[in-house]
Length: 124
Image 1: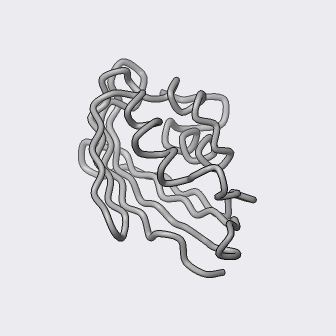
Image 2 (image 1 turned 45 degrees about the horizontal axis):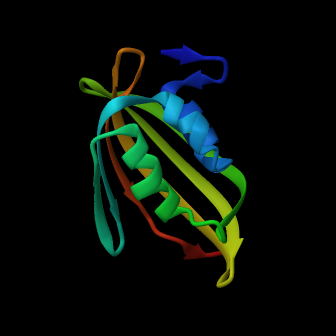
């Protein structure tokens, strides 16, 4: 699916950079198959609501201020798409950068399957 700002992955990255969870929910299939890996934990969700409530809002808590999207790269691999993105921000621990790489597949014009890995917050 192409959107006004590009691919589903690019649109997802920019919405996450704004912490616009409502926009992300619209990009995710209601029965999305999501797995993620952060430096200390693995994450699993089987619905758009779970991805928002149990994963992304935990990865980026209210005190984590995302200031800008530094980079977004998209592509294709085998039968799925790829998006990589990097954010700059700050929280009580100071300035940070964080990068994610994700592979995803569409289902009914939305993200129906996603596997993501996070660098975790790195000091900037």
